[in-house]
Image (cartoon, rainbow, N blue to C red; front, top):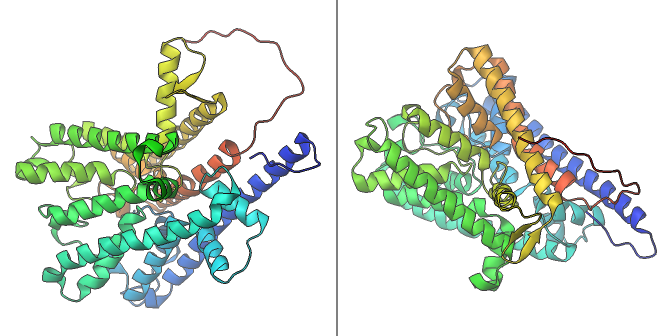
Length: 460
C-alpha cells in the first residue's frame, strides 16, 4: 500500500505504507484469535453443553475456530451437543467471523459518532481490498445493511419452509441457517435425522435454492454488491466486478454440469432422486462448495472423481472481500489469463484492454503455491496419523483450508492431533490467506536502487 504523504519522499511514504500494512495484518489476525479465545471459553462452560458438563478444551476450540473462521466442520452435531446458549455463542462467532470483528467495531464507532483513526481506516481498506479510504465509511455501512437485508429475506423463506415440521422452533432454525449460509459457514441445527444438514430437504427446491442463493450472495464480496447497488448497470461495473460475476457463474455452471453427469448414475447420491430434483441438488452441491459446508447428498457416497472436483472447488472458494474462504476466484482467473498470455507469447497479461500488473500475477502464483503446500502437508499428516484413505484426508484438509465445512463423515472420529491440524488449517485458511493478501498484494511497489543482470534458466 503506497501512501501519499505531502512533503515526504517516496521512500518515506513506502516505509509508512509497509508499517500500516503490517499493523493491519496483526490487528486482523489478533481480532480473529480474540474471538476464537472468548468463544472457546464460553463453549467450555457447562451451560453451553447439553450434557451439563464442560465439553473440554479441544472440542470447544475446534468448534469456536470453525465458527469464527466460517467453516462448519464439527466434532459433534450442533443441535445434539449444544444448548440454546451454546448455539447463540456459535451464531455470534459466525456473524463476527463472516463480517469481520474489526468491521463491526468500525461500524459501532461510526454509530457512536467517534471518528475512526487513520490506522482503523487503513485496516478497513486492506480488509475490503479497496483503492482508497474515501470508500470505507460508505462500504462498511452498506455491507452491514446488505447483510441484514439478505439474511432477513433468507430467514423468512426458511422459517416458512420449516414451520410445518418444527413448529415455533422453526423461527430460530431459520434465522440460524440463514446467517450461517450467508456467512458461508455451513453450521445447521436441524439435527442428524435424515442424514444430517439439509439431506432431509433434498427434494424441497425452495429450501435448497434459498440456501444456495444465500451462499452465492455471501461469496460475491461486499465491493461487488456495492457496485451492483450503486451502478445498477452491468456496463458501468468495474472490470474486477465483472470478473467476479463471470467466474462465479462459470464455476457454478461447471460444478453443476460435472456433478449431474458423474453422479446421476450413482444411486448413493443423485441417482436416487427424480431428474428435476437431481438437477437442483447438483446445483446445490456446486454452490455449497463455494465454502459453505451444507450438503443435501451424502458426501461419502460421491465417486472418487467427484471428490477430486470437490477438493478443487473448495480450494478455489469465493471472491475477495466476501464471507467466503479459499484462494478466491479472481486469483484463479488471473493465473489462467497469465497462462493464455504465455501460450500466445505475450509479455503482458491483458483483459478487455487493461493490463494486469506482473506483480499481481506473481502474487497470485505465490498464494496458490502457499495454499497448495499447506493443503498437501496437512492432508498427508492426517492420512498418516489416522490411517484413513488419502482422498478422504485430502477432502477434510481442503474443507478446512478453504473454510468450507463439508466432510465425508470422519471428522468426529479423527485423533486429537488431526483435530489440531484442522484447527490450524481453518485459522490459516481464513486469517492466513487474508493476511497474505494484505501484506503482499496490498503493499506498494518497491523500487530497487540496484539493478542486477539477467540470467538464463531452463524451464520445462
